[in-house]
Length: 140
Image (cartoon, rainbow, N blue to C red; front, side, top):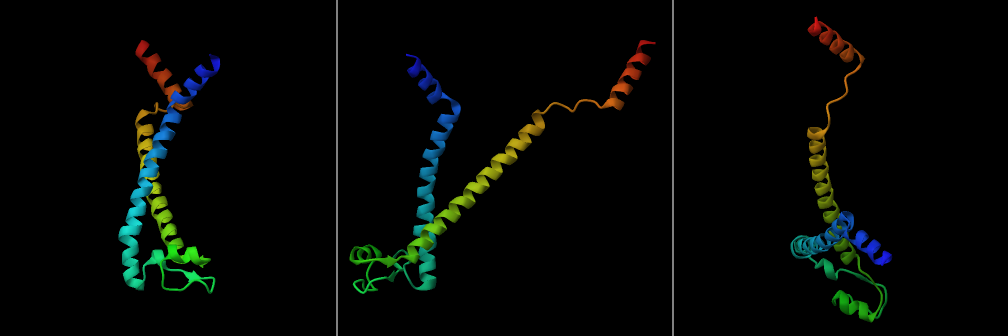
């Protein structure tokens, strides 16, 4: 029974649950970022560059024609899928930027909370001496 009890204590700890919630929310947020990049940003870049970035590649084999979809091209041989790489890189940059702003906001809230909950600083030697003098004068 000791093992099960120890495992239960581990699994119920706040940090483990927080991590699980973070992973689940992160996965859902990743889908949102994928949609923003694939459905909003990349079509605009496609208009600018006159190409669908998800299908921009360089064939690395003579067996692969240039004007077919990336999925079909990969079936026929090796391709240098730089458009797909740009899409994934853009996903990462947007996700990293948003996470940076979340962490920055949370850190600001923590600092604000710490400032309001910290104990006042201990008096220095001069303040202690003045307090003793005040107390002595009050007694007289």
